Amino acid sequence: MNNYLSMRNELLAQKVIKGLESRNMTGHYAADRAEAKRIALSLIPEGASVTMGGATSAMEIGLVDAVKSGSYVFLDRSVGDPREALLRGYGADVFLSGANAITEDGVIVNIDGNANRVSYIAQGPRKVIMIVGMNKVCSDVDAAMKRARSVAAPTNAMRFPISTPCKKTGACMNCKSPDTICCQFLITRFSKHADRIHVILVNDELGF
Ligand code: SF4
Image (cartoon, rainbow, N blue to C red; front, side, top):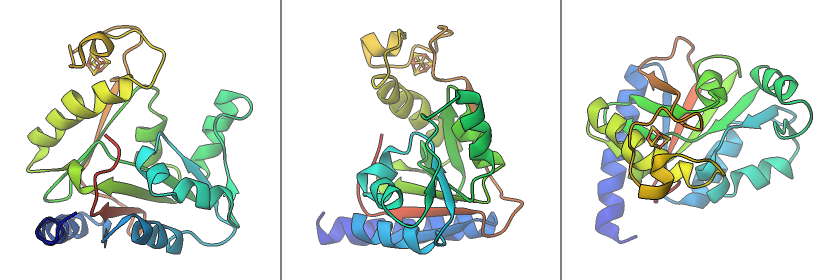
């Protein structure tokens, strides 16, 4: 990434961080993926139980591998009875997540199918760490919803063996297909609990 873009991203990130702080959330800026991983790991105490949603961005910066091989208790939702694994996750110390979009004044937008991700963000795990590339920053909530629905969701749908119109066309058709992954929309505009939601803005393109 060239210097001009990095400088622009840093200024924009500072604006988002101010917005997050006004909403009782904590923002961090990472100049690159390695710094993002370092910041995230500094927020996770040794021995903490950690779970994750479909955190593509956390995987892309190597955070998920670092947690799995580190001194933490990784709660793998794909192991064992799905309902028991889901309920175990609510008691986790840390939830690793991405975001579908974030506004310049710190509102976070996420769309979910099974709703484990949006429900864990809303309540449950003691701390939520979101890894968010600067490609997710949008001017306002309308633009963030548009991004989440027309960019993030159709791209996400491509990853699953499901039958939805967007898988064929690449565009959201506002479907009510039984396979839809757009069941619950979460707009996080404020956190009741200080030090619970941390957003690490990364000077890079991450996720979708
Ligand atoms: S077509 Fe359906 S599953 Fe695909 S993005 Fe739109 S609402 Fe979601």
